[in-house]
Length: 104
Image (cartoon, rainbow, N blue to C red; front, side, top):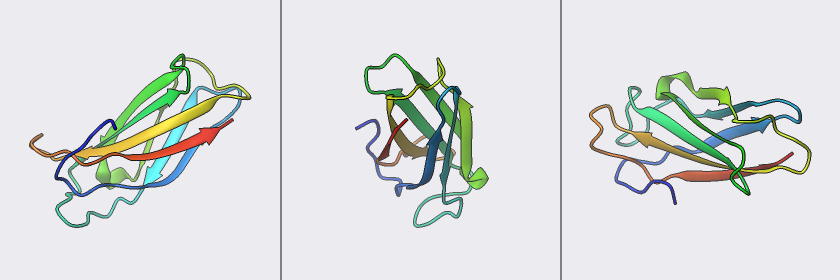
């Protein structure tokens, strides 16, 4: 668990990392639901199974996508775990994180 709170959770639509590239991309529903806001900041922590490769992505919920760079390029056999969560505009509420994984 990376985050636990009272803001309604955001779920992954897709996660992507490619062999030989440091670029990671995640997509999620940009339409606010429940107590979410289009102005929420969405964070995604990406971590390789052994912790050697990682990234922290962030952006507005309204974007529906986050893209960033891993600390090193992904390689065949890498197992990545993705943790997605939201933070309200005033910083007072966080959501439970959603999790996903990807094997390169």
